[in-house]
Image 1 (spheres, one colour):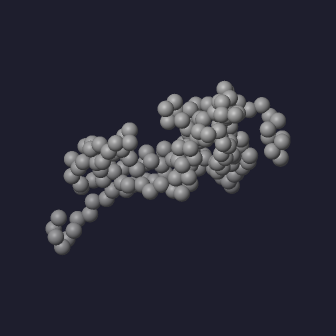
Image 2 (tube, one colour):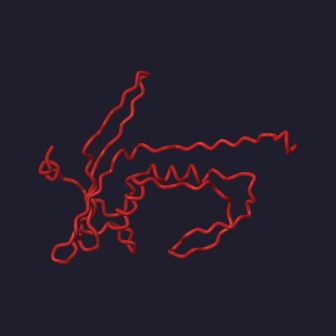
Length: 165
């Protein structure tokens, strides 16, 4: 399939900011729901909101390191989303915005995995075409957005014979 075949299709551009990787939020939710036990729960946590650092009281949760894939995706979104309106930057022609343009997501591959037990899974690969604030085109590949890692936390209390606690 060539680029000419892809561009000949009628595709609606995405104007409102859309999250293409929903799995990143689900991975973050696993960690935010895992409250560290046997720790003073009145610990203050420093959270960022509106580019200011505020002190909030809340339960202490396990920290999560973001993957390279997630960091690259966040950098891409910062470049192509207008922070004031929350929409993708439009395409520009001679410095003027073209109405009705925004990011376009093309799915290039769909893969089906069928297991011996009869279960089936689908995942996709695609490309997002978008523009930055200057109107320059930017592309970002989206690989397997349906796949995410669920982290399960297990808590176990053991008795210490040496300290009797």
